[in-house]
Structure formats: structure tokens, C-alpha cells
Length: 307
Image 1: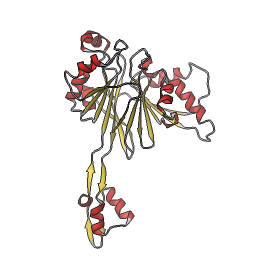
Image 2: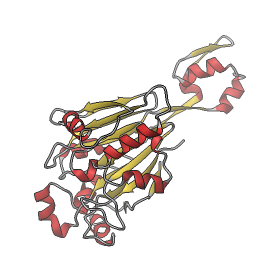
Image 3: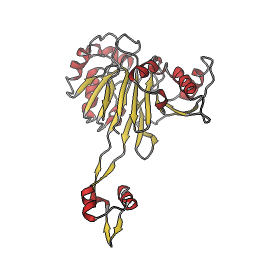
Image 4: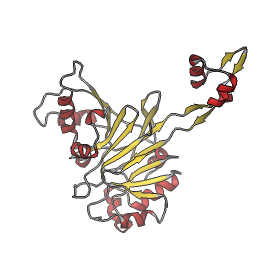
């Protein structure tokens, strides 16, 4: 099952008729990740046909309101939808410095019974450090500190390399033993009919794909390091270059900055998001990005991307 990303909001600061504030949902096998959760994210999920119970992880870039203000409603809804369960579901929430304190404050802002187990993970990387924060047999997630006006994290979702067995070669060998095939799939050598078989003889490795999310930062070295060799880079582009001074002052990127990042990080495709509400049409930011990188697309609400 391929990785699928749904853009739930592609604007910045203020929702408009065309663009909600930031939120993205990544689906991989039976796991779901929400990257940021601006106001209205629940409604956007409903429109997109995404079951909110599919959210296992929430990855928060930072604590500005347009990135987190939908979180309290989501927590309440997830708890109510699972109220009949004997065991309370677990929701993992990752975020930068002060996340534990701010989550505690958020949960006190309205009256409701929390029916979830909230696992809060406050991530504080050292300077220029890239951390692995989630890992299982299929994928891992890395993060690093970006350069915004408040502590802010970028994230990379990376599929692990997988071994693809050549069934024709197995048939020639007459190998049908499931457990032995399983060992080969896991990279172990076996002995069959007195002959040693190593995995490389009957299989090839498929490189896992990497998707990186860079939201709310100035162009910086850590953004380049985290994004390196991504299949897709999803990056903020709040302004076009004519407002470069404003972008620098507010520690945001222009579309051209995002394109320079894509070039320097050797990514295959750039998708820009988090557009200022001043851009009613995407043409200006798209043209700005294409001055430095050609394989670029402007995200829109409910856009889906499959890897």
C-alpha cells in the first residue's frame, strides 16, 4: 500500500474560502500521521473522507496558533468516538521545546473528559542534530530544529528499504517452503537441498522513499540536511520574492527560497504550501519557485499525493 498525503490546509495565519490553515495527513499501511493541526482540521478531514480514528501520531512543527489550534477539538472527538472501548486509545503527540507545558495548558482551556491516553513527546535536538523519533519495521521519522521565531521542527518520513524476491528464481530452485522464503526475505541465508542460498542471489533491494515536511522557517542548513535526497519535499513558501524582506523579518521562506532548498538538498519534487492569504491564485509563487527549481507544484486544499 503506497504512502498517501492529503493536504487539509495550505494557507498561513488566516483561513480563507479557498485555503484552510495548515494540516496534512499521511497514511501508510495501518498508520496515520497528522502533520500540524490548524483550526478546522477535523472538518477538512471529514470533507476529505479521512476517518479521524486513523490518527496515531500528531507531529507539531511549532506552537503558533495556525498550526495547533485544531488539536483540542480533535482530542475530544477521538475520545468520544472511542468511548465504548475498554482500553483507552493512545495518541502520540510530538513537538518542540515547551510542548509538554503547552499541552497541559491547552487541555485546561475547555471542559471535557479526556478519554485518550496522550503520550506527549517533547523533542529538543541539539544544534545541527538530526534525531530519529519514531521507528518500526516499516519506516522511521526524523526531525531537526529549524530557524523560526519560536522553537520549530521539520520532519522526514522515511520508508525502510525492502527486499523483493524474484519468484521465477525460486521456481527454478523448486523452493516453496514458506519459512525458508521468509528467512530470505529477512536477509538471512539458507540451505536448501544441500545448497547454500544467499538473499542477493534471488532478490533485489527496493530503496525506501523519503518525504520531508519543512514548515515555518527561514532558509537554513538544517532544512537542507533534513531534506537531502527526498522523493518529495513539502515546504512552506509564505511569500513570493518581492516580499523577501518581510519573509526574512518573520523568518519565513519565499517560494524561491523553497526552490533553492530543493536544489541544494537534491530532492526530486517540491510541493509548496503555507501561502499567505494575499495570493488568491498560485501563479505568482509558482513562477517565483520555478526560477530556481523546475519540478514544483503548488498545493491546494484536499490535494492528494501518492508515493
